[in-house]
Amino acid sequence: MNFCSNCGKPVHLLIPAGDHKQRFVCSACNTVHYENPRMIVGCLPRWRDKVLLCKRANEPISGFWTLPAGFLENDETAEAGAMRETREEANADVELVRMISLYSIPIIGQVYVFFLADLKNLNFHPGVETEITALFGRDEIPWDQLAFSSVRYTLQKYFANEGDSSAPVFVGSYVPNSESTEEKNWAKG
Ligand SMILES: [Zn+2]
Image (cartoon, rainbow, N blue to C red; front, side):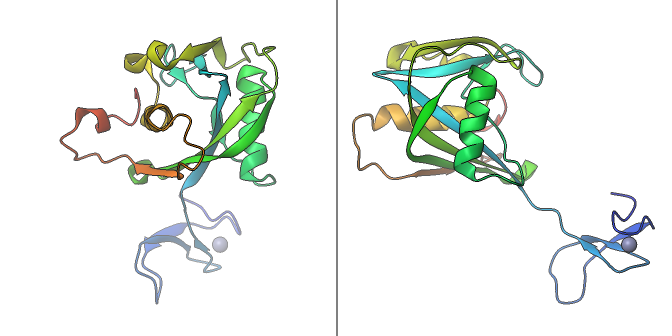
């Protein structure tokens, strides 16, 4: 950020009085411009023992598989955003069952929320950001071609607890210094 969105004058990076982190502060109107993580909402749509995945048509990570998800808009609830993204990316109509996962990636300021959802019908088909939509059983998931670690985490937890209606919301995060190669790349699964 270079200029104040309130008055257009230059901003400076400094720690405001009483704060503990550097913020962009306007030199003219003293507005403090807080920057906070963005929320990504999506669904894990299921049909009997299969789940719906989308093959991405766009960068980043074109050609890899993901769950339908995207940035939450200012004027909508997390639930509505998850259903909207599922319609946009897969033209799929779902009924939300419950929140299934909360996944943080602090190094890029993102928080994912996924909802387990039941497909209402099989009329899904690719939206503009999607190349292919398809149902996958537990043993058919393309684990080495998943687009994001949040998707891998959510699918792993779902299949590990399949059929357990009392399973908790799974809470995970991307750990960049982890020894686990699985957790080293937040992108590409
Ligand atoms: Zn200003």
